[in-house]
Length: 208
Image 1 (tube, one colour):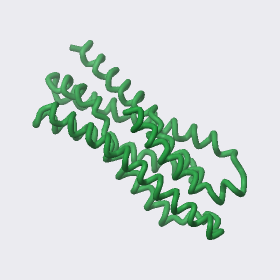
Image 2: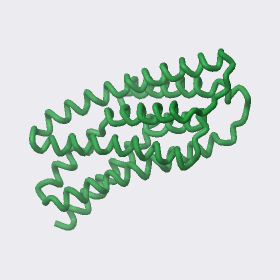
Image 3: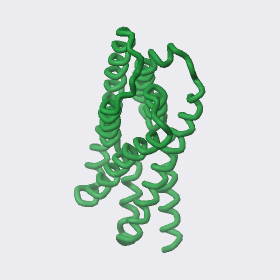
Image 4: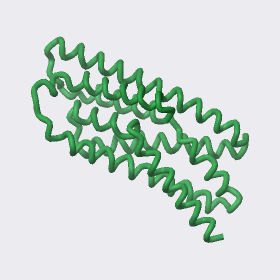
């Protein structure tokens, strides 16, 4: 019994950490943090919010699968993942166009908090629409071992995902923090949108 629980916990932690290494889980936050001048604390909070939406939808699909059957939920989850890639590209293009329009008007970023709020909630919706279907079979395996075991697996998966995403984003933010140039300040939003869209295109092309 304990061996099974340990194995499931390791599997949940591995899935949570490894799938968070995909660029779409940290590149958008890193480039937006640089473009909009987010502090490390604000960056961590926004990443945590979006990661929470991501893992909550993933777990909700797994729990719903216990009632509806795993095949149905896996198919639905895969469709959501495909749509999420398109949405990521759309968000990147829209944000990039907004940034370039702002740069053409020769307005340096003012870091308006209302706009930052809109961006944060848009990211939250995007990540909530992109569940990790790999966790569903793990939840199915944990369910027969009892509610406590299933809950422990869920918590392990969520903590691993949240911790990995925040760590990668903050590392990325630290890596680009030293970039200082007037052109970056002026065209940062446009470049950030382009990088986000490019990330979405690459991931869809690779089928990740």
